[in-house]
Length: 273
Image (cartoon, rainbow, N blue to C red; front, side):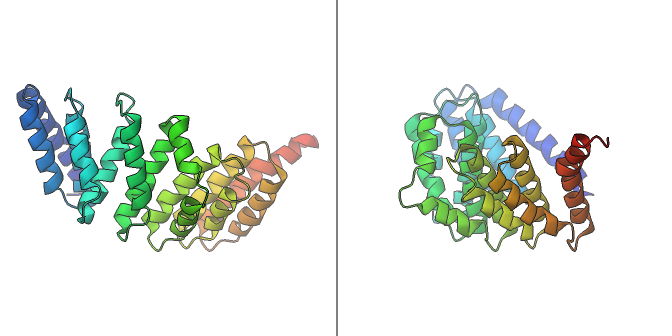
């Protein structure tokens, strides 16, 4: 069967499983907690299994009045020597952070944040990307105190790690870091000096999708910030070279961005259109 059929089948099985658990275990929190722990330790680092395990654990956690025992277990597992446990725990962090109905205490969010920062330097690529995705999610939702804990770094340690990760050998890590840089661009006091040059650098990435995504992100920032001169220079240096890219679709994207961002404006101003 094709990939879509397999995915649909997995979703069907997952739905039946979750309905069964809700029906028979929702009134027995001790057994539900044991089940969640069992799902966690029986998961693997295969993407499909890991993603569905994280989804099931998060979904069933929401049925518990007291989630603290499960959260404590996941916080411990996030520091396990087993990479699959670390990666899965970070994926669950992301789901919890993005859940508007989840009411994590500040202390728990700070614990998660410290684990995420450690995970960015992990030796396993899946753990690095999971950590980065979790931090990105936290930036978009957390209050100012959490954001300050992320960006206020006297030693610039986090920024140095991000510079390393945006050049990571693994594509999934670079993709995750690009999204993190985009999120940081909205909260940084001076993104033009550090954030935007790192994004622009990825317009020369060996991956076609990275080059295209970096071009789109730069263009979005430039228009939203009303064309600051320093960013315009960074944009031109990055996008013009993509018009001569070896990939045809990337060439087309670059020409489209140049046309929609500047040429149409110029034609309108001089009365051609």
